[in-house]
Image (cartoon, rainbow, N blue to C red; front, side):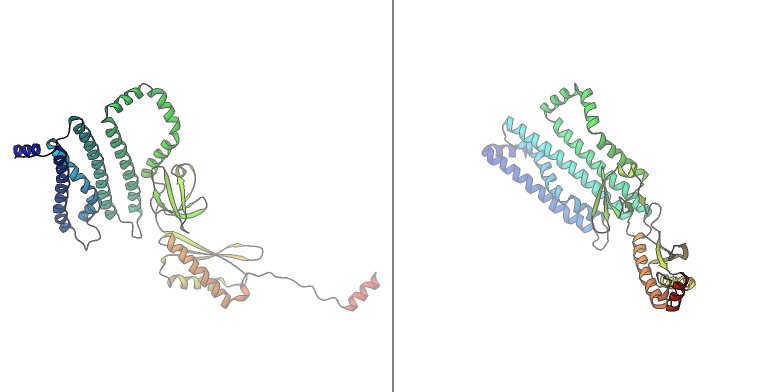
Amino acid sequence: MTIDLTELAFKMPAWTWNILVIIFSVILGFAIRAILLPIVRQQAREGASYSAIRSIIRHLNKIISVFIPLLVFNALLPFTRFTAQTHASVEKITEILITLSFAVVIIRFIRIFEDYLYHRFDINKENNLRERKIRTQIEFIRKLLITLIVIVTIAIVLLSFENMRKIGAGLLTGVGVGGIIIGFAAQKSLGNLLAGLQIAFTQPIRMDDVLIVEGEWGKVEEINLTYVVVSIWDKRRLVLPINYFIEKPFQNWTRTTAEILGTVFLYVDFTIPVDKLRNKLTELLQSNVLWDGKVNVLQVTDFKEKTMELRCLMSCRNSGHAFELRCYVREHMIAYINENFPESLSQTRIAMSPTITQADQDTGTDML
């Protein structure tokens, strides 16, 4: 059959034969994809929340449309009738494209494995400390691996050119001075990268942690190689260099557990019956599903010059519930006080002196 193809090739004009080989490569590549895709799709369970087959299809569908035709064309390249110079150029371009496509395939496989780990360690549950810890490591390792793959791929492509090898050899002579210069120039970036590695494994912060940083309340949305994105409650984004979380203090409300205590301060008059307020707080907490049933305390925590400070303390499963419950308690406690003990709201007292009569004024005049 090889002889028949060779005879057929020489009966046609070279450009016609070359175009036919390219078209045949594309058609054969798409045909292989069209055959394999339905077979693979049958293995996916559409009703399941996660399917490895579905993840493979989603991530590899587009790149396979390029990768398979390139492989087929590379296999048929010996049958083309390019000139020696053109053949060398086409072979080099095909080699580079296959290298780039293969790198993309590897990156996509990393994404597929990441999908599996995300399914295995689902953070959509209340006590998700372990899951957030592992996800933080997954995010950082995935980004680091992709960066390394991109660097290695670019290096492979550049080293495939003879001229680039000579340039590389020439650069080696200045590696001493160049290394020092690059070291000083990249000191900040390398510091951030090392800080990222430290954060990924020591984990002072994790994905979805609740932080108070730079005076703002927010959740960790992204942990990248050199910076962290914190999603603030009002939908703003606070972007900080990753070494910020190594060098500066910050509050992490979910460091060891998502549970948190909520506080509400009330400033009332000294005459208010504290026991009745304590009973009302218990009633409010027991009627609200956000309370986890663990901590329920109302105490007199301070005396001011004109008011008494009461602290309502309650426990919640996470910081989001704590914020909602605190607002609920504030609203209903002040309504209860206003309705039942309006005279005990914070007030300022003024003592009036007795009225001075005209007789007192006359007596005072006589004395003078």
